[in-house]
Structures are given as structure tokens and as C-alpha cells.
Length: 522
Image 1 (cartoon, one colour):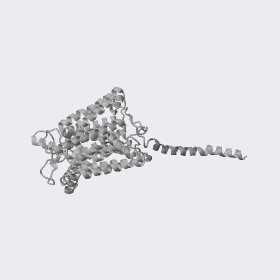
Image 2: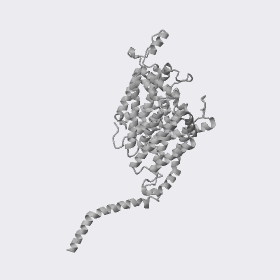
Image 3: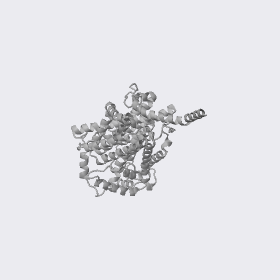
Image 4: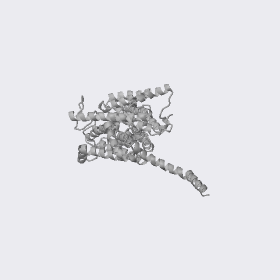
């Protein structure tokens, strides 16, 4: 009986207890195995790289050659955009107005020929699309001369009386300027749409961000060289240097925004690089430092070097608004990355802290001029505040219909008063929000701002919610904060090099804000 009872007890233990013990044993072995295999073995399957892996562009060309060509064309256009005085001249507007919409038309025709659906369906961004279409329609109405008499601006009646000739009146005080502004707006929209469709692929989205960082680093390096050898003056131009870095841009504040975009992208790519290269397992902490050093020497130095060049150029602009907006954007990027680090073991919080310290150190080393300027002049500009007050007063005179999109330079002299100096010409309001509301009216101006805000919110939501491939939404949300903050004190968003680059990054962020597990095509 005792033997039988013993056998029954052993069977009971083997049946109920042993599986749990085996599971615990396997778990312990699984935790210890990385120490034995991959912690000190560079050839570990987890850390080893395949040297025979083809380059990313070869993979793109092999999979979808037309999309690869269009992406290359988009990147080429973004590289050209800042070259001609930051794209702030009619010649550059014309080239961009043909190149980028042309690429978009080619892409749309190719979808029809190949009988393919859009990777990102219009229904995914239906609300922003409807708002944007309404704005385009309203700009067309503002330019039209077939309107009820009470809608036309009184300046047309005054001009007709002065010329003794009746004139075709319109809501816009300058329909030609409104048409030019509409063309530029459609150019920006074409970049947004094309980037959104091409960057539904995570690989293409990452390539686009890498290209933007490389382009910004190249122009930053050019600006540093021009500052050293020519005092910041532009070759083949009568524009003076001014003692600040501005690369090929007319205005140093605009270049500061452009450099800030590149710096945000560089920081995001550095975080992604070290997160992938360094082991995230807590058991591998002793190996992580060696792996970080090795990865930096192999390929990480290019990202760090690009980020450092852009940081030096940004601080060399001595732009208060540009530098502070960039700091705010980087802080937001690190905050979103830190929030994701608490949820996922793969994210390294120590790398976030390291990069924050590195950026702060670079600011302390190279930011003496910007600190000196802030201490001398403060953070506000009395003239710009006075201009904003004048613009707000003018908005009340055409609260709902506006004065015409892109007509600030024509309407502002009618309201200019003694609160600002009589010297100088104000062709922009130094506040993109107020200028938009003045031109379109509060209804359609607010619709345009809301359309962008909805896309930015989509990127921010994707940056927090996505479990992988979140680099593009994080960069897009952070860059949007940079652009949005600086647009309150300057007109950088109205310069095409900045606007086109921002639209490309925003498009990539919107495309990657949706999980690949959910069907996004139409």
C-alpha cells in the first residue's frame, strides 16, 4: 500500500507541479542565456549584421522602381529648394510649382495605369481634406470679379473714381498676389500628398527623414564656411552678411527654423540608431557601453557629426525665436521618447538623458552669442508687437471675407500708423496666423489652420500609440511644434524651403501614424 501511495504521489507531482517547475526553469535559462551567448559574443545572431545585405535603395528599386524614382525626385526637389535664396524668389516658386505638382501628377497617373489604390486613402484624412478644399474654393471666390457688389473691397471703387474708369472689383485687393499665393499653397499641398503616399512604407519614410537631415547638414556646413570666409555674405548677391549664419537664406531667422528641422530629425535618428545597436536587455548592461562605442565608430559618427554641424549653425544664426523653438521641439521629442521608454523595454532612457545633456552642452559651448543677444534685447520686439496689434485691428474690418489671400503687403500700408517707425517696409506680418486670418477671414483662415492642426494631432497620436515605426510621427509632431511656435513671431513658414520641407516630414508622419496592421488604402 505504501509503495502504491508513493507512486500515486509521484504521478500527482509529475502531473501538476512539474510543468510549473519546468516553466520556471526554462524562464531562468532564457534569462541567463543572453549572458552566455550574446553579451560577450559580437557574432551573436541578435547583434550580428549581414554584410551581404543590399543597400536600401537597391531594395526599393527592386520592389517598386517607380516609387523609388518618385522618392528620389522628391528628395532632389527638397535639396534644391533652399539653394535659390531659400526659395524666396519668383523663379524658385515657378520651378517648385512645376516640379512637385508634376511628380504628384505622375504618381496619380501611375496608380490609374497600374490599377492600384492609394496607400493612404483620402478618407483617412477626410476632415483636413474637406477643410483644405473649402479654403481653395474661397481663395478662388476672392479672386473672382463675378461677386455681389457688397462683397468687393472699397479700394476698387476708389481706384475707379481716381482713374475715371470702372474697374472689375473683387474681394481681394490684389487678385494677382492671391493667385500666386494659391499656387504656392497648392505646391505645398502636392508635397504633403506625395510624401504621404510614398511614405506609407516605413523604409521610405525613414529614408526621407535621413535625406532631410543630410540636406540640412549640408546647408548648415555651407553656412558655417560662408560665415568663416565671407562673414555670412551670399556669393553673387548684394545682400550683406550681417555677422550671422544664414547659409543661402535671405533671413537668418528663416534659416534658424530650417536648421531646427534638421536638428530635430538628427536627434530622432540618433536615438533610433543607438536603440537598435545597443542591447536593451537589462542583463546586458555590462556589454552596452562597449557596443555603443563600437557602433559610434562604425557608423554612428555620421549622425552625431551631422547633428553637431546643424547645432552649431543654428546657434550661429543668433535667432532668439528660432533657437527657443528648436529647444522646445527637441524637448518634446525627448519627452515623447521618454514616455515610450517607460512602456517598452527596447527604448533606452539613459540615451534620452545622454542626448539631452549633449544638446545642452553644445548650447553652452556655442551659444554665447544667442545668450548675449537675449540678455541685451530680451525676448520681445516692440515693433513686431505693434504690427500684430495693427493686423488685429485690420482683421475686424473684414472679419469674415478677408482682404484676399497673400495680400498683406498691399493692405498693411492702409493701416500703418505711428506705433511703428516710418523707416522700413513690412511685407510680412511676422505672425503667420494673423496674416492668414487677415487674408482669408476668420472662417476660412481658421479652417486652413485647423486642417494642419488635425494632421499634426494625428502624428502626435501615432507617436504615442504606435508600438514600432514611430520615428516619423515623433519627428513630424516635434517639427510641427517648432514650426507652429516660430510662426507666432516670424514668417519662416511662408518661405518655400521651410514650408516644403515641413510638408514632406508631415506627410511622412501622417502616413506612419497608422499601424501597418490596419488597412489604410482606399
